[in-house]
Image 1 (cartoon, one colour):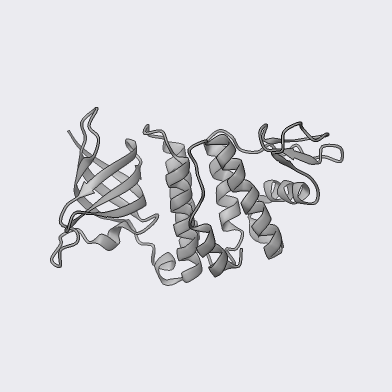
Image 2 (image 1 turned 180 degrees about the vertical axis):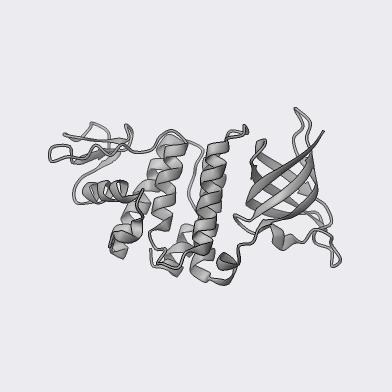
Length: 242
């Protein structure tokens, strides 16, 4: 059966002399890996740069239940992302987002709400004319909410310790080591409070952003055992001074 779907590129790697393997989160059938033949030829009909991180594409591919690596027959640009391509900080954030998604999304089933969130976030990043230093924080928190383990914003005068196993603030330190206190806990609460109105309103110093992002990625590793260590954080830090 031939499937046509929008997709968001998460990863692309060379395969043989002329082909690539592309991991794509598709709107219609969820997470998929495809072989795309001939894209590394000089006269390729499908160009390799179409598969840059978080590229939004329209693809046509063979799809058969139980089949592993599928063949992508057609691919074209669905949404132009010129802002990301021309701006180094946006490019660094897009690489971070793609790796985060590649590590965090494990189920193959389609998820229309998750796809719409990712697509809208990528388009927002591309079009942004305001500072984007807090964008990785915003995206990581909202993604965790879509994946079902987003942190609760129940911070209060008495509940000032964030329990990363439970995903909520508590009044006393738990017996395990996966928690943190003030002032970082109140800074996380401020991010959670402002996430729906835009983190550009928060003036978070670079060291705070660094520590919060580090804790968030640890939070992901706790809730997704296969998550591993993010490689793109170093690039993000160098470019954004995260």
